[in-house]
Length: 80
Image (cartoon, rainbow, N blue to C red; front, side, top):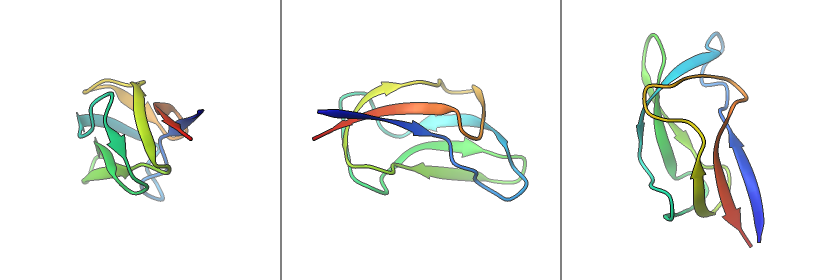
């Protein structure tokens, strides 16, 4: 099994910092590419952050209400 560290993508051209508002997937759940992992709040909108890989969510590296910058590891997904 391979583990992929999922990083927070840049959600808007001028946004580099967001607040995690809600996890949509729990540890131990299987996700597909594009499955929304969590909701991130910018100063103007709430945005879904999709999974870049399919597999099993094994770690949530940030918590609800955490302030996170672009490039921060937010999750770990295990896949074949």
